[in-house]
Structure formats: structure tokens, C-alpha cells
Amino acid sequence: MDKELKNLFKNMCKTSIVIFIYGLIVREKAIYIAMFSASLISILSLYMIYKNAHYILSKQNSPAKDTFINYSKRYLMYAVFLWLMVKIDLSWLVAGLLGLLSLKFNIFLKMLSIHLKNIKDKLKERR
View 1 (cartoon, rainbow, N blue to C red):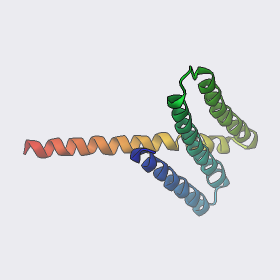
View 2 (tube, rainbow, N blue to C red):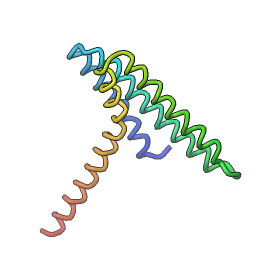
View 3 (cartoon, rainbow, N blue to C red):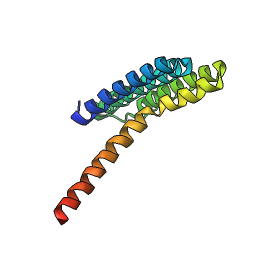
View 4 (tube, rainbow, N blue to C red):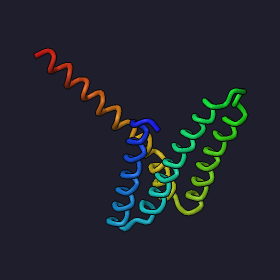
């Protein structure tokens, strides 16, 4: 597994732990159950994407059918989770949606840090 991807998985696990601890501190079930579960689902989805990419690269024939099936599994997992959150409460749905976005948030923070580092390096060069 690529170093950057391993770091992303580590950061996702750290984010999930922070979400869980925050939910326990504020004593909000929607956060420490729904948001934490959603962040775990996000990690599982990233792992499924990783495994699917390896499968596609190793397969000689057209992997379109298998790719579509794996894609459908991920979105079915999201749909079932969000359906359960709707059945429980609106606050659980919002917390679940925010938890599913934790992967995007981690990627955004990584890209932001890279760009800030590049800007800092360019400013040092001009001096």
C-alpha cells in the first residue's frame, strides 16, 4: 500500500477516535454512535475502493461488470446506513452525513497542508 494512502487510513482512524471521544464528552448519542459509525463506514468504503483498484489493475479482461458491482455495494451500504439514520432521528441523519464526509475532510486538510507548504517555500525563495 502506498505511503500516502497508509497515512490517510491512519488519519481517518484518528479522526474516528476524536469523533467518538467528542461524542462521549458532550454526551450526544447522535455523535458517538451515528457520526462514529459513519466515519468507520467511510474507512471501509476507502478500503473497498483500494481493493477494487488492485483487482482492476490485475485483471486482463474487461472488469466493467465487477467494478459496477463493487461500486453498487458501496452505495448500497451508504443508502442502508442513511435510511437507518432517517428512521431514528433527523439529528442522527445529520451526524451520519457529517461522519461520511470525514474522508473528504481528511483529504482536504492534506491538500491544504501541501499547498500551504508550497506557498511557504515560494515565499522563502523570493527573499
